[in-house]
Picture 1: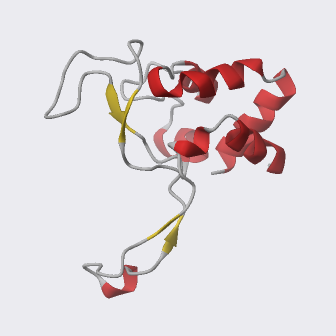
Picture 2: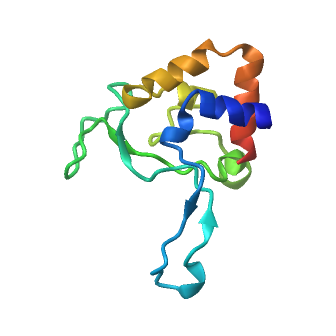
Length: 131
């Protein structure tokens, strides 16, 4: 798992899929204030390129902009949901395909993953499945 985590960082995936946050001090529920969470998301919009574009702008987001989905729990998708379809429209049949659909701001990260050896890609996927 540690090798996959290192590769996740090496490919700069953590720049959008931010591992750790601390919740605000002014939470609606006091017990939720100041909690450390690990969503693996920055919850922001990013230009993901033409391949994922749906040509449906919404407010200030273009059809190329997508909110970074949290990765926590992604390894349980098949158990919980009964499938391994990923991305906003389910076009990716597995996590590696989801990575390969990244473009736009994430193009350099995708290229890093493509340059990984087969065993490094497997280590990265094992890490993602552990989240």
